[in-house]
Image (cartoon, rainbow, N blue to C red; front, side, top):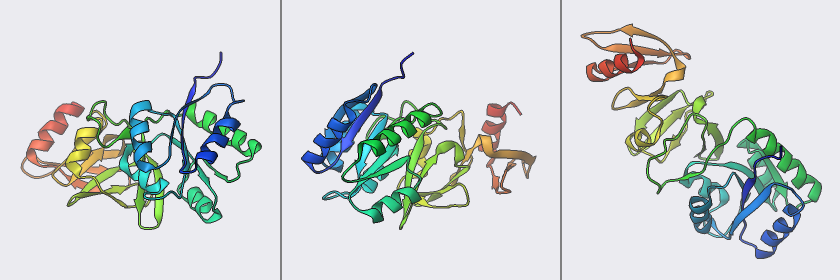
Length: 249
C-alpha cells in the first residue's frame, strides 16, 4: 500500500531556490508540493489554506525569519530547515528539527530528510494551526509547538508539557527541565487545548492530566494535585469539584 501523500510547503525568499527544491522533490513518489511562499506572511496564509504535513523552511529571510514564523503558529507541522549558513544549521539541530539542509541542496541529503519525515509521520501526525483560526478542533497531546526563549528554541510535543503557568500576557511551559515563556495567555491556551487532557486547575495553572501522580484532600473541600516531578498545585473549591467530576473521584 503506497504511503499517504506528504503535503509539502516550500518557504524560501529566493524564487530560484524554490524552483530547485520543486525539481529535486519531483522524483519522490508521494511528495505533493501544495504551495510556495516567499516570506513569513505568505507562509502563514499558505499554512492556513493547505495545512501541510511538512515545511521545507528557509531560516533567514527578509523580515521575519523562519523561527519567527514558527512562533506564530499554535501548532506546527514537521519541519526541515533549509539554510545557506552553517550557524543556522547548528541552531536547527539545537531546536530538534527533523533535519536541516545546507544550500545548495544535494539530492541524496534531501532523500535522507524525506525518509526521516516518513519515519516520523508514522509515529505522529502534527497539524499546523495558525493563531487566527477558530479554537476548534482542539490542540491534542500529539500536536507539537515551537517555543523560542531568547537564543534557545524547542519543538515540544504537548504531551510532554506537564504544566502551563500564567505570567501576565505570557504563559510559562514546564517540560524536560525547561521553563520558557510563550506569548500566549493562559485563557487563550485554555480555549485551544483538549479539555479531556488539559485541566484548568486555577487562575494560574493548566495541568496535563497525564502527568498527575496523586491527588490529596486539602482544606475546606479543596484538592491538591501532585505531578510526577513533585510539583504541587492547589485547586480552588470550584475547580476541585470540577476535577472530581471529570476524573470520577
